[in-house]
Length: 236
Image 1 (cartoon, rainbow, N blue to C red):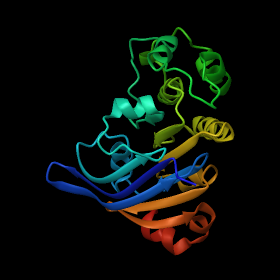
Image 2 (image 1 turned 45 degrees about the vertical axis):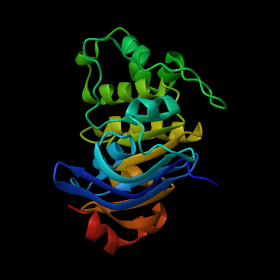
Image 3 (image 1 turned 120 degrees about the vertical axis):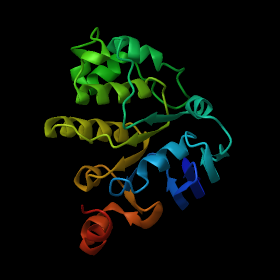
Image 4 (image 1 turned 90 degrees about the vertical axis):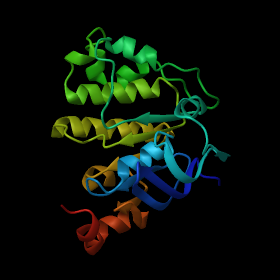
């Protein structure tokens, strides 16, 4: 079966700095795939490149079998690829409901459309603050709002960049339950993470990236069982 997300021989640059080197990565429909690595390994650059947010890159990017290498980010969003950045980037002056409306896109074939009420079931914290401005929310609440706003676009796949970073343990647990619920809905997820334990509970397969190169590709179970690999590429 054709993967929903596929990148081939991806090189990416920031100015003259060469960041990604020949990255190959695939995510099948309904899969949760983790991209693991230390801070600075190239995880965020990979997700930004998939979304078309890195201007200077070479290689092929495909979404749903279509070559999207030359498409701008807004066109990928229209095609059904959602992106949740590490920086969150909510509209701080807008309320929760207004942030959700900003992300609204039409429903897609074969997918149950997301509505604010469905999202409030997934993120009960947001249901209690519908009229609260985004700037008056905690970091964890803002992360939930960013994911919810992305889902309002009714994507068939989402790129999640470090969703557990900097969050309190109780919020990390809530985030894990939410991502598990998205998987149960059949959503395809590419998850960038440093936290192996968080990713292990959610992911079917894993890639490990170090210094802009993929060092491991395989099942999450095999990675979790390989102490030498974890020591080499994941421990601080």
